Image (cartoon, rainbow, N blue to C red):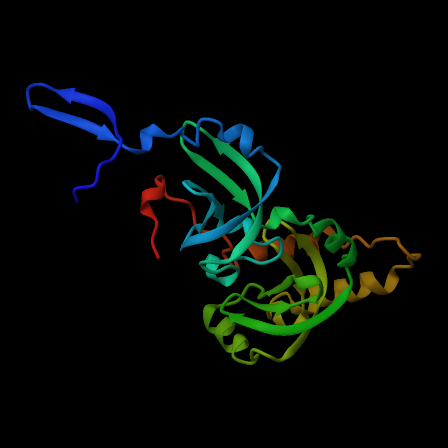
Amino acid sequence: MGDDVDAKVLSIDTDERKISLGVKQLTPDPWDEIEEKFMVGTVHKCTVQNLTQFGAFAELEEGIDGLVHVSDLSWTKVIKHPKEVVEKGQEIEVRILEVSRENRRISLGYRQVSDDPWPEIMNFYEAGKEVSGEIIRVLDKGIIIQLEKEVEGIIPFGKMSKKDRRALAGQYEVGANLSGIVMKVSPEDKKVVLYKEELAGMGKRTSAADEVKQYLSNQETGSGEKLELPKELLDLASHAEKDGVDNTPPTEPESESEQEE
């Protein structure tokens, strides 16, 4: 109160006898040259300012914030909330994905600072390979296990009633070790789809298991040569997977004004 300040006249309303003034308008708008300063593809340090269900807002410089969408926080994990990866006040490195001067929005990528690991993961988890890991979640429609290379594997339950699925799920506990046969790798869902005889369902258990065992026993492959499982087995895995876990990440609301703690 009582301080002298410089201001710029923004508008004059003679009828209301009012003059609108602005202080920030005395300095250049940082968004005027935003596309030249933060070019798409470049990496920058920033500080996490706020976390929402759909992503993390980070400050690149004073007055310039960008959004890391929840889907851009990890290559290999399905992130439900950004607090699983980052926290407020944390300094992180991000890659500029998109800049809109008109909408005053910058899209940032956290995972994009590192290389996409999925090509290597797909080579490592060849179809027909038996793998094992620790159970991290037991769901009504399948079991999630932690595999090597920081990737999760899903063993979907086969076609059976909900009652049978619950009974089957009750036989497995988080922390126990479980093995399965690799059916396919799904980078889109960030999962390795596995098959296990005991979880395939009573109706298809014997035939599906026999097909897998018979196929694998008949294969003679040299080192470095990949196995291709029968289409019917892959169809079975795909159908079970679609009936299984919903990995759709939260969507961003239309306005950034909908930020929430």
